Length: 168
Image 1: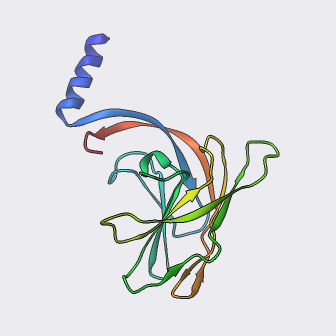
Image 2: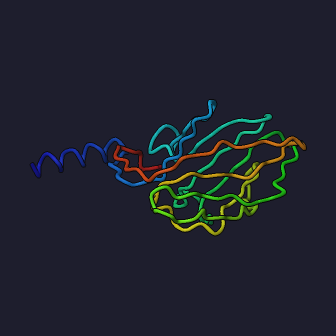
Image 3: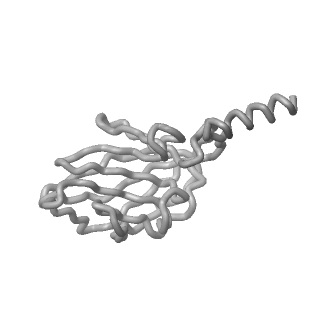
């Protein structure tokens, strides 16, 4: 058995891949048009929820280990350079569903400056680590003065096991 495991580890290393086991926060929305993307290309757990509204691509995650400098999650917005994006009331909240009577947790969306990136990013400030299931409510975003309401996301911590490349 030990030889077989060693052989599998050697083969994975030679192919540039390794076994990866982790837990992650999985987001889902019942609204059509929402897709889910993994960390690295087409490999890894689907930690990003993506949707498009008014010509702007929205990306949401509650998986902070992937986002340098983020405290409790991230909302990214990508659109044409000439699009004006604003969030006049930059507060969202999560409603825990498995914590029996715990009230909604409010958080602030703080604009984050990232060098070399052509996108607007908001970090979620004030959220505890997500170890529970619940619903994520994001604030209204204005794209060129038009209100865009985000879907309500359900989230839960899930487990992932798979083979990923070393460069991911």
